[in-house]
Amino acid sequence: PYIAWVMRGIFIVCFGYFGLLWVSAPGFNWLDFLYLLSYIKILVSLIKYVPQVILNYQRKSTVGWSIWNVLLDFSGGLLSDLQLVLDCADMGDWTGITGNLAKFGLGFVSILFDVIFMLQHYVLYRNDSLVVSPAEGETEGEDVPVIERIGGLEEEEVAL
Image 1: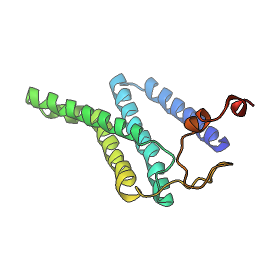
Image 2: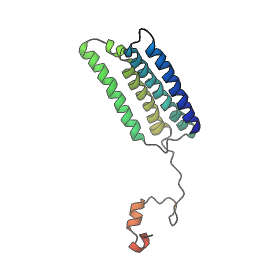
Image 3: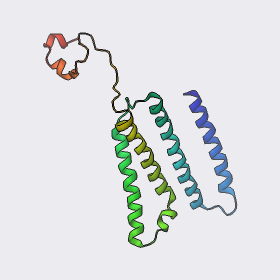
Image 4: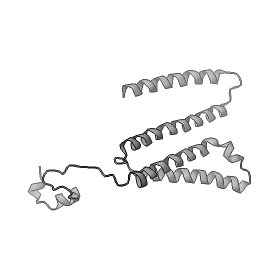
């Protein structure tokens, strides 16, 4: 965590320094600054997905994270790009995609990595299961949820 805080501090100082230089430069345009921020967002999105893909590959498993977030992210990226394409088709002008590369790029990156995650979860590593040692008083392979086990006990057994 210490290294992450140091890296974050260095990033903030550098970003602030170069941002101030750019803002004070003659001919500065706020729209260009916002475009720069959108490209940084795409870069950050790339950086956040790659470690999870590598970790899943190294472990040959997707145990420990929920696929639901990936499915929601996939639907968001798909609908975002679909909206962009449908708007361009309706207007008959396809420069909307090239004019808003950040939106298209974020949707595309999201879809790309989500497809990789779905392949890892449903195809490549689907038969891997988490090996859990049985709890005290439980036989191996017993798949009874904790709530049902407690529900079958007498009140004095449940009280601590």
